[in-house]
Each structure stands twice: as C-alpha cells, then as structure tokens.
Image (cartoon, rainbow, N blue to C red; front, side):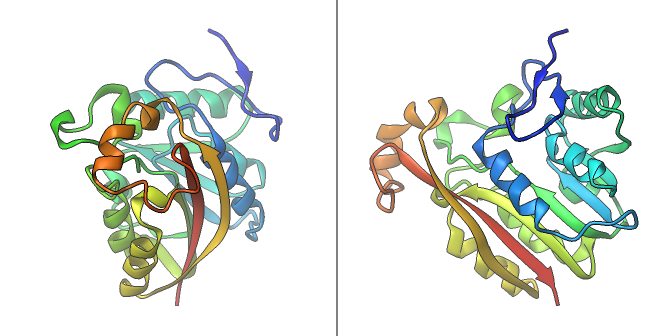
Length: 229
C-alpha cells in the first residue's frame, strides 16, 4: 500500500486506490471554504460524495462529528481506511446521495459531486468515470443536491458545494434559492483543463459550453455556500 501526502495544505497522509477520485484543486478550494465555517465538537457534518474522505478528515480534525457518504463502496472503504490511518473518527454510509442518511439532518454539508459534462454516447457513468461524469450539462447530481439540501440541513444549517462554471453556476444558485436557501458564490479560481476535459474539447465547443471560458482550455471552479433560512 502506498501512502502519500494528501496535499501541501494538509498534514494528513492518504491512501488512494485506483478508481477513487484523487483530491485536486476543487477539493482544496472546498477545504478553504470549510475552514471559514464555525465548527465545534457538537457540529454534525456530512461529506456527500466523499471520495477519498479528504474533506471528512478535515472536518473531523477540527472536532466535528462526521459522516461520509458515497455510492461507491471502494470510496467508502478508502475514506474509512484514511480516517483510521490518521487517527480520526468518521462514520461511513453507503447510498445514492442523501438516501445514504435517511431521516438525518446536519449542521454542515460539504460536497464535491461529479460535475463534468459528458457526451450522451458515453452512457451511464460507471467505473472510474462515476467520480466525474454528470450528464450532458454536468448537472445530473448538482440539481438533485439542490433539491434535497433542505431535507438534510438543520435550521441555519449550511451547504458548501464546489463545481465548474461549465455546469451552470447561476442555475445552481437559482435551484438552491428555489429550495428555500440563501445562496452565494464564496470562492472562485481558474485552472487549466484536466485530461478529461481536454479529451472533450471538440464536443464542448460544438455544444457552446466553452463560450464563457477565459481561454479555450481554462475553466473556473466555484464554491457555493447556501444556508437554510
């Protein structure tokens, strides 16, 4: 088993097997937003689409009571092992988004869902692509999270979600507001396209998804914060 530093911004060490999303710039951006939130030993945190468990570990280190949820059994095993490796307590729950935690509510939900637009010929996400592919508009999971957020947030509970501008930032803000939450963008950064987006440049251009890019191979990542009113 190879164990490596989770990131230069973290003291954690992490085991990430093939098929589990490796923490990248979006994870770091969400971690920065997480650090601005007030967390105590009584704070209940849900890390939705946990992947490697990086954000769950960060919340646990700050003293929160953390539940990590994912539809991938491999991701859950990875998150559990990384919690053990770093001496943190993280509960893991298997399921499709909030169905993993039926009837439960949280003070803070953090999520880095799949958000990469995918050509329709790719079929349903499966295998490693399940960690990033999210339908032709990149909103296959984002829209569901927006609609379900009130059901898992306590009064004054907060949601932090990261995704690409290619997936429609204004649509996310509108969806969260329609669900009764107060929502705003709290962080932005621009990054070069990764391997997956570079492989889809022709399709993205053909469907007008590159119109708002600063450059032909650059995307903007945003963190959206929503609060239950």
